[in-house]
Length: 108
Image (cartoon, rainbow, N blue to C red; front, side, top):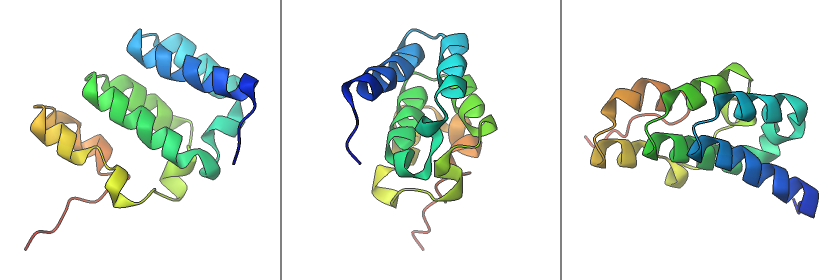
């Protein structure tokens, strides 16, 4: 789904709130713009979760989940999973949050 310049600006602000560790702004934007939490934006939401995982900011993942995002209703394909990044970069403590969306791989 194409986004307007205004929507792109809002998506950038949501992402920037994670970078700046501004949970209040993150929450305000997501509550003010419920379209961001639609199932059609689940790939963007996956990116937010990956970004919060990389920055070790579980509070942003928790807040996103509290707001009932589309990613909890219909996960994106496994290739977008931040699980491997959590393992590789020493963020295994985030796995309980991440496995709400992506199941642990069964390599057996």
